[in-house]
Image 1 (cartoon, each protein chain N blue to C red):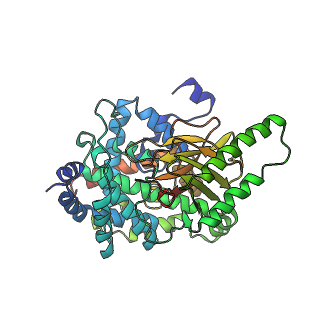
Image 2: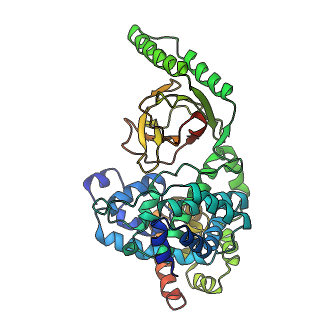
Image 3: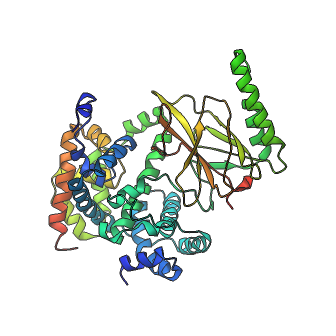
Length: 180
Length: 270
């Protein structure tokens, strides 16, 4: 059964449908959360909250506004980013400065992110972006940085980062359109 | 782009569609952009398309979930009620993201210590916190202030005297503490907040109560260390949360809570 139909059944209180939905989305949800949050124990916590939230809030899913999988993964991403940011905010300023001094150069981080991607086609498509498009998209999506932080770290104007993000996503769409 | 936006040096909201789709906006900008989205049909369509692009990045990260997770989630599902679907007439025409702007729900399970919201257990420690806050505010008061203080003390005494008064407290990873003494039968609670100082800028700490199937309800604004007395608390209340809001408070939370506290241990959450 497709995720859309499962989610609609879950909204009606169908626990069996939820088990099927779990089988379908738990891997993508957990993997995405872990990619952003990194720490396995925290990732498991966030994934658990997200999956339970799917049950609780399935009634809010509206198939006219997008696919069920997009809805689920958008929620998971939002929660993962919130977690990683609040963890970062908890690191006090001094520590942050110290960490920044030791942090690897940012394009290096972006390269590591890409090297870890399981799906060959996403990797291939990411490599068809310009370096700035790729860094802007991956630092935001996989590392949870705001576009302002990305601009600061890459020493680029805000407008440039916003444009690179948009162009990067659009180019990904063109590249992945056939493969998806 | 409004004149006000220009005057305040705010950016054209249209240009934020891609950062928004990547969850790359801070809380304030996210909120502003969502308000803009609610009025902009073209933006909603664009954000939806960009969000679907971003989701392709998610698929590449999939990996099997840990084996214990399934049992925990499924057993929680058996005891967790669902929210009713929003009434169609009130459902805003917004992309799925906007859904994510609601404050984080009360956590259903606490299977391991949490790095940010670690409850600490003893009721006596919690009561000591509240009482310490009561006595911390005695100096330098005018007659009117003292009268207010006395009324508050009376309300607090009322809560403390209730047969089912219980205490709980929680702290975040940075040493901030929230303490509560509550009576479910009276529907009242005394809440203190310590270690948070004044929020930067013209902003305030606002206290919310979370209930299932309902928007968070404001219980008032904190004034430094002074305890806040809340009444008319629903027995179904599940948790308290504190957010930082613009001066004067907000109708609903606009930022992520700085601290949350479950109310189950003080007799709520029926």
